[in-house]
Amino acid sequence: MRVMLSALTLTVALLVAPAARAGEAGKPVPFILDFVVYGKHAPHYVSLDQGFFREEGLAVEILRGQGSGEAVKNVALGKAEFGHADTGTLILARTKGQKARVVGMIHHKNLLGVFFLKKTGIRTPKDLEGKVFGGPLASAAWTMFPAFARAAGINPNVEYKAMDAAARIPSFVAGRIQATTDFMTSLPGYLKGAEQRGEEVGYFLYADYGLDFYNNGFIAHDDTVARNPDLVRRFARASYRGIAWSVENPERAVDVFMRHVPQADRGTARLQFKIMVDHLYDGLSEKQGLGVVDEAKMRRTIQEVNEAFKIREKIEPKDVYTNDFVKDLPKAWLFPKRVKF
Image 1 (tube, one colour):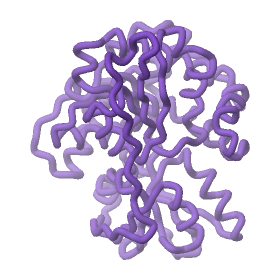
Image 2: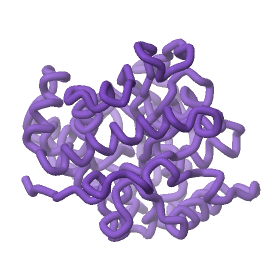
Image 3: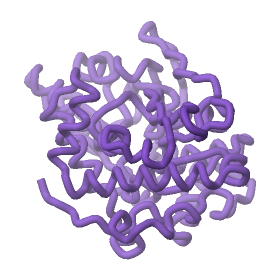
Image 4: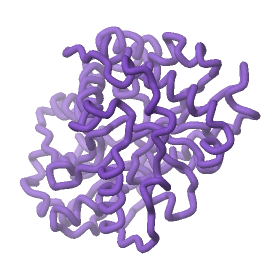
């Protein structure tokens, strides 16, 4: 993939000094997101707002992200105690020596895709060849684009304009880039921007081309998992309690999100959150519980990454995830009663 740094530029991911003995009373616990804050992150703010983190003795600080690659790197470097990041990106990072792993799944169903304006003439994945893409370099959707290209039978060597996440949608609707890779939870923002210009958005979902692998999960450093399992357990309890509460109280979850992110458009945030909830379920999580990783599916995820990136290093599922912190969660949190909205 050719990468061209544009004037829109990259911004350095927010780095926070590691907290001494994070998780002790009053000590901050940095939690870095995969992206800029938007509607799909509502459950994290529920855990904060409803006191679920506090009840577990955690002073969690939610930090804006700049892509899953940066989230994994920050956790691996000890700049954040926990992260919200893509599994495929994490697998790649482990081959480069970054010691982080999934401690609970979030997006059991894959959300990644390629977005484009219909006026570009793109009708099939083959039409993407020769087009100008753009977005954050550390984006999980961009990182995994070679896997999509391989599955769709197209050349992955496209031009890519690297830019800050906040510049992506404006550049997209203005035609400064012809395509971008992103999460389906971001689609409402593209639709709104395109509608204002009288344009229509098209997309290709990676999952529609056979890439049915795990997406984002909660991640932690290997050392944290090994040396401070109680911290990870408390974080998982508060986080999945927040997810369960959000699934059962979706409109109130959006209310909570808007209190913490008042600059967001409620309608857009609501739809982003709805898409997020839809992708908590993949046919396995309904039976095994939210957060629980299926070993066979993780093995397929690793295989897809290995084949797309020609990785020779042998990676086993046990190197990538653990269910130790989610398997014994209360059933009410593993299997919340979903309320449609």
